[in-house]
Image 1 (cartoon, rainbow over the protein chains, first blue to last red):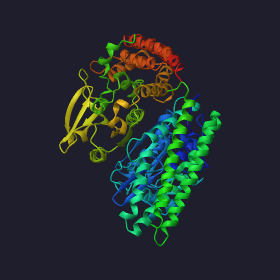
Image 2 (image 1 turned 90 degrees about the horizontal axis):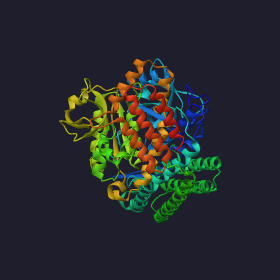
Image 3 (image 1 turned 90 degrees about the vertical axis):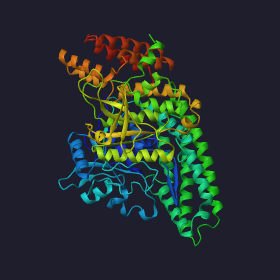
Image 4 (image 1 turned 30 degrees about the horizontal axis):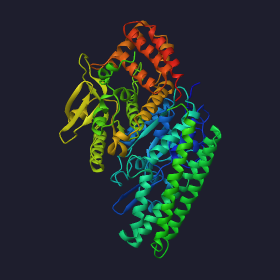
Length: 352
Length: 286
């Protein structure tokens, strides 16, 4: 049985909550690797937390890594990703790959796309990670026909917008972030033989929980949560009132609006865990799915309280309550991750 | 068959060299056989694979260690060098600079033409960069670095885990090795650059000349100074045996012998290698 992918992105495109997991779900649709977006999110290690402070900027993200890269590793796929010196060269590569029948996509900044202008209040959010844009066709005038996760039908992005979005104008805004994929184009190379998803899924969950509980550095996972809680406690002492309001609005937008399906991605993750639990017949995974659904609700409440605060005359009033809420969330996240690690371990069996 | 004394001879595999300084500097107690397996000693492709795939393999190696990887790959050498310089400065600000993985044309002793090999890049400064490979170390100027002919130019930079930095002796090496060998077997079995490459090559009814050309390619790609191909299969066998997959290990030992026969000119051994390795894969749950 081969795992050949379609030569073109499916139409209608299956909509979703996050750009990369939606793209992957569309890529594997109607193949032996078929899985819904939520499960792609789980296999790609979509659960995480990242917190980084740089001067007055407090950057929060509910994920830690490039989901598509981890998904590829775990499913024996390959992603060939190449950046370019100009838009024309990037389009030449995309055109070539499309002609050869590869599912092709571009890296860009979502805030530079007209389609997203009205969807997210960009002025209320700090620059964040990269957006993936599945490409259907490169047109003669340098515009592209593409898909995006909120729409079923193809969209056309004109050359000027595409140039701006793929040039990654926010690259370097967070000084400790790695260089962005400028004019980056990727193609998805399927495995020659599909791996057994019943083995892939628990291994993916276990790895995801491992790197959440033992993160690579202080900005990620439980360490990132700890840093966030610590800095949040003193934020009103460090920043003027208007800057506090900006940080609260950014927190709301990153937790609730941007590419996470809301609730810091925990709701999407929870649905993926529930699908994994049904597939594996696992009661512990069902319990874990409930825990993450509750965590998603808690993050959502926190996000909305942050937004409400940002509009208050003095957002710093009763600040300790906000910090306490984050403290409770950190404890609950740690417990849930440990339980999920144990649950996944029971399904790994003799696999490594 | 699983001869411990052969291990030292095999650390010079082209794929393992770029990781030597990193692991040594961090004092991660990983045996050479595990490094070789994690670095991806899988199959020599009968034709060139996209070079970008090498950076993906580097990502996989670092992920298997519990590290993160920041990789960059561009069609423009100037763009790639700018990104490398940024990454270099970034590593220094975060903690300290670590050697990074790349692919670079290297002159291997005994070969007429330069060969693209996995390399370690270190000591980047305004004058140039140190390139270390299985063929040795050489310092190249920035101009030479930019002029090196490659389909794409890039790097894969490691972000070591806090555990590896602070307490490498507390890393669960047994678990890590078991996971890594299972992942590598999974990749050899399922991926587009796995055993299918050889199966498709054989299905195309190659002529004796084609097979001979492939044999030469296999030698060129894998035989660095001091290394030998059959031994690399033995390394994989040893990792499988240590992980408890004894039957698969024995089959890989048989495959090592068959590799020896193939390299000695026995064409049918290639098909036998495929059958033997398929049988080994079936013994490992990944």
